[in-house]
Amino acid sequence: MQQRLLALVTVLVPGLAYAQPTDAPVDPSTTTTTDVQTEPPVGDAPPPDVTPPAEPAPPAADGHAISAKYDKGLTFETADGEYELKLGIRSQFRIEAARPDVDETEFATRFSIPRLRLQLEGHAYGEANSYKVEFDMANKGFALLKDFFIDHAFGKVHLRGGQWKKPFNRQEMVSDFGSEFLERSLANEFAGAGRDLGVAVHNNYEKSPEGLEWAVGIFNAASDKASIKTTCVPGAMPTDPPVCTSGTPTNVPADFGPAIVVHAGWNHGGIKGYSEGDLEGGPLRYAVGLSYRMNPRDFDKDANDDLNIEHAVALDAMVKVQGLGISGAFILKKDGQNDAEVGFYGQVGYMLMPKQLLGAVRFAQVPEGDEQKHEILGGVDYFLHGHNFKLMADGGIIHTTAPTGGTATSDLQIRAQLQAVL
Image (cartoon, rainbow, N blue to C red):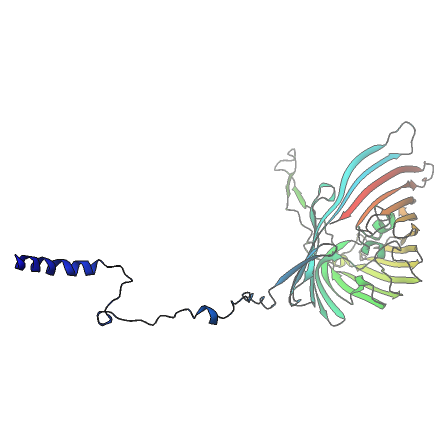
């Protein structure tokens, strides 16, 4: 019996030892130890660390970082100043009415969007390389490219290539969005300047540098507007109608003149010589310019075997003083062997309310065949934010003198317009 109890105790005791709680004393000889960092006594504990975690340092600016701002358009620029792009939208919404000065006739009235321009300009690979792209998305329903050029500055001398306004006649070079009237004068149309494809050397004349401004360019003697060439050949039989084919629209001639344009001017007093109206105010400022254009027409000859070369000269001026702005031009043209013709205009504007309300009058005269066409206009501009946001209205008479034994004609016109540069 005692032997059976001894055997039972021998089996149970190891099992009871195995079932003891984990915090029971353990024989150190049967365990392994590891280094465990214990908390110091409460009385010796260091104060808690309340220092906030350090924020990561902002990345250093580099040439690829881009900033954006608004300055007469949304402008993007790299941190190193090597690249800049300005986006702008320029718009005009108009209502106009016109009728001949004849009994029992009515005004023909219509809305139009004469101009809606998307403009991109800036510089690339450094400030010496400027560029401009301007596309007219409306143009009274005929969209087309207006400007594209790249201009590199060699110090004060610039080399430009592309399409832009030829440096001929100040009023043409004034922006459509910097004028006192809704459209330029009849004399400007007579001058026949406008945009063209070419290259020029200049001294940044469009910015009216103090003192001398100049430009010399060679152009296609074409236009920014495309034309379509149509060719007709006789039919196979004498009774057959001719067969005509039309090419694709283009403003690039098969062979250029080339037209040569030379411009020189003088600016005084820090005048903005290519913006009408004296919004800035201040003492006397003036600008004068003389331009010459020659189109040899590829040295073609007329029926009398004479060279059919066109010459044109424009003398223009602008004066601003204490809110008063005066501008005008004389234009002389000689086309081939025809007699020389002269057109001119004069324009006066005055700030009736400084920086807010302007009144203006204009007179122009150009040849119309053997007669003369006159333009007599008056207008007002209400500036909400300079030329960039303004209301405009003008009205007047386009009068053509009477031919021998004929009758003079007059057309009345009234126009109003909202202009916004976004």
